[in-house]
Length: 483
Ligand SMILES: NC(=O)c1ccc[n+]([C@@H]2O[C@H](COP(=O)([O-])OP(=O)(O)OC[C@H]3O[C@@H](n4cnc5c(N)ncnc54)[C@H](O)[C@@H]3O)[C@@H](O)[C@H]2O)c1
Image (cartoon, rainbow, N blue to C red; front, top):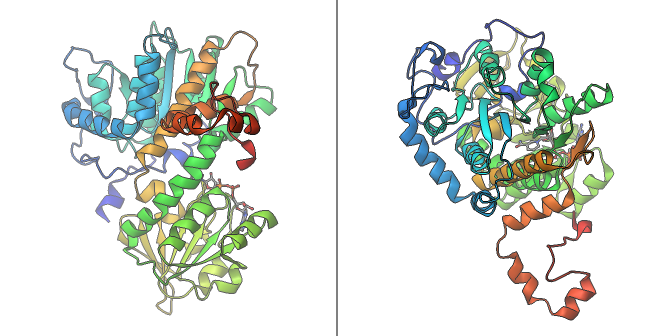
């Protein structure tokens, strides 16, 4: 309850007509973070802080935590060897020399490795957080100590959130020429407040579903005035973040919040896309009895071939112990389903939006809500039945568990390559439109994460390579039909 109430209320002055996006309130929680918003009640905006070199070009919770943050970054670097190897390969060449990148992403140990890579490749960076809860304060301090202009802390108010973004964009004598965004809030701010900045911007790299959606809307309306790279839909993101990351983090999120044992439990997973496939595989491996609901016959058939029973939600809703939504759709679990669930049924969402479960329909006078743990609510019916609702229907893994560093490394490497590509592209290669990362880059990201792959290629005889259409001495050529 304490943790719940210390979250800031969104009462800050609204500088824009829209509120901060859903993605800016879903957070990657960090088990490693030892700081929280209650360790010092003075707002960082009121504090005068300088790093050891005398610079005060940052605003973080407490610069004194820099040493601890540095250790967190070093731990993250160990499972981000691809990004580090990109840093080593390219730092002589400095492909981002002259780039002035304004960024708005989660500020965690893993994104710090990305930011420091961009700096090593020649860029100047100014950074704010795309989420008011997810900043690792000690990591932000370490970045500030290393000279990055970072404006972020855990537990920002909405007003702080926009203030931090503004401090990154609106600077005397410094103008951004690249944007790296996660959720689209930074891009939106620049459009609304500083449209002239776009005269110098060479491109936007966007990572999230929400942000990409906004970019396509801008493009459709003819208002996108620079090229943008959609990292969200790149093969490396779809396969690794959606599939493998969810395969690992679904169990983590459920275990941390409920201590549930999965062996023999009946679980229904709604949606058998990338996220659903990952969740089902993990649950099956632990001995759960898994049902799948689908609307797409191909995905339904895949679920069937993978050994899952494809059902209608209404058929199994009375008997299941856990319900997980992964559809990207809305109102998949309705009040009617919730009314029919059995006592202690756990309900959670792994899809992007918090509308997959109709949580609003549970806010009625006859139902009692009891917060039993951080991110865990018991919703109690008049007859005493309890439904266990996790993270109020927001993304379970981003709200309640950590995300594997290796997966974040793949996304971060993709973002770095997208920035390099847009920054160095010759005039005319990209127009004012939204682009997917060129396939070659997806291949490069994958091969960087698989240093032993060359060894497999050398095992091929020349004859075999020719038969498969592979060039043993050229770049790795994947079989796209496998995707
Ligand atoms: N939790 C995470 O870490 C994470 C990571 C990546 C993506 N996501 C989000 O998860 C969601 C799913 O992503 P994906 O890559 O699996 O998408 P996808 O399009 O591959 O899969 C979604 C599936 O849900 C099915 N579906 C749609 N409506 C349905 C309904 N009413 N009932 C049953 N099935 C239905 C679709 O037919 C589709 O097969 C998206 O919102 C995405 O943004 C979450």
